[in-house]
Picture (cartoon, one colour):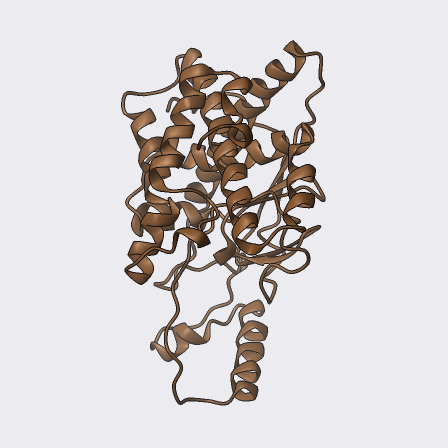
Length: 311
């Protein structure tokens, strides 16, 4: 993707220096617009320290971490030195400002491209597009939808019209799930912006209200349709980006591969060895890649009606 030298969005909020928050996503589980959840699996229970001891150690760890002291590094024999940014790699070295800066510039450029796309589409239909804010965070963040850790993955909060992204997710996408490439990363941003589009169109509030009255299985199925539509909207953005001539050969394949790798069935097979279809809430690998491609091929909102289509 030929992104360098293009306009960068001013709607970036950098909260990476605010420090981690404890706990997972709180509040109404239907309050979010969806995200790239990657299950980590679960292990069995066994002996060990008491809950009280664990909580005490966790508190001590984060207090020292905020002071720039990494206990993990100390126990590994490394030398301790306060880190102004609080962001250290596994080898104890602070990630380069240049690398961080380039990644932020990339995200800001992709967000700008989504703004151009959706401003044009909304204007053509007589609407006004409200550009979302994109919040960069590290470890954890507070939002209008509650608190979230990096393990939550990128997500959109309709309560404050913001997309939340810990850019370390891109590393996980490439290293754990073999979905590397700048257009794969751009697809992640475009998908979350797709949830913002759903919110502006009134789709997301309606869906979230319906899900609260449904059984778990029905709610999961509604969630799948919501996520697939966001994939389709991301595909529409991809179409407009292609028309600008800034896509490289293989970019489309990168996005389709990313969609394949984060399908519910593929993730469940990888993490637990079997699939539970009734628990799917994002869509299968085949569905996710197909709906992204549908948006990419058509470039039309009307092609993305997952709620009245056989998905």
